[in-house]
Length: 421
Image 1: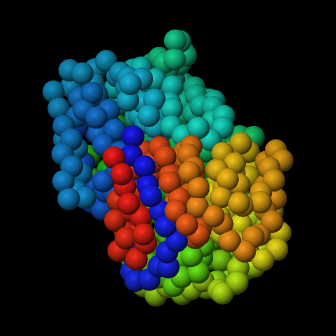
Image 2: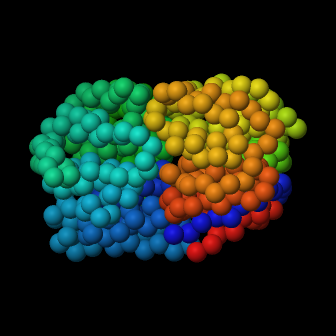
């Protein structure tokens, strides 16, 4: 397994933000809803994207991926008739589970393995199954697989609220199944994330009839068939937020190219409270870190609240703020595996249930640390750039799932970071 060697660095220059992984994956799953060609642009070259491509190939599609252009063509259909998405592939990432809805709607049957992904706490698929069953799908869970029959899908009024709010992937799954179901469907407490709005734009281009995506209420009128689509993936707001955190942690000023300011309102507010500044112009964002970071209390919430996927990265920044900060994790209460690794670098963080109390220090110190999940990996990279001495980060295969060539982008900004096989 690869590892990173990271040293204290100051960043400067411009970095280009890639297309959104979390938007691209459901779009790829949506190609299962049509027998026509789907073409996506600005697709990031990531392990998760390639894994989803392999799943689509197992399901009978022909997938070509070159120079950020992804083309998904219809195949023979022989494999897709089984509707099998195998555990060997699905276990590596949670987003692959959103193949279930399209398979039930178009293929009428599905056998999809229960998903894997990062170890950030319990993430059940109850809301997915609840919503699809209310669309009249027959689903049984046996031996680690969901066996589904979607031959009688029909519209329904569905409430998708869960104990920790709305679910992005459950909303995507139910939305994709509903566009081919008979009659009218109303999804209440739908996820409002930009990734859902982007998926809805793709579905509408394919001929789906729906309104309200990006709000808690989505209304869908089922259609009989969908056509192909050409669409560009929106920018990755989490990658943008990660580079913003890197600038704050290293007390640097950098520019991001290819961002959407409307996706970063909660991040902008937190940065302002910490004493930094984000200046947006067209699709660019200038990040300016203050000489001294101020403490802040952060609560992760569904969009437009502060993203749970940026909690670990901003935790690093708060370890260097002057004062005491509080992080409340309301999406995944156990998402604090990075805390013990940061404490190895002389951070002072106390974890109690869904809370992390952070006492700011003057500096962090390099150490050997272990990456536990995708966003924790990015957090440890930021910590290594901000710390005195050398930091060795093991198991960085996690970071390759969600960040396109992150070490190359950081080196372009002046970071001292090396990947070692």
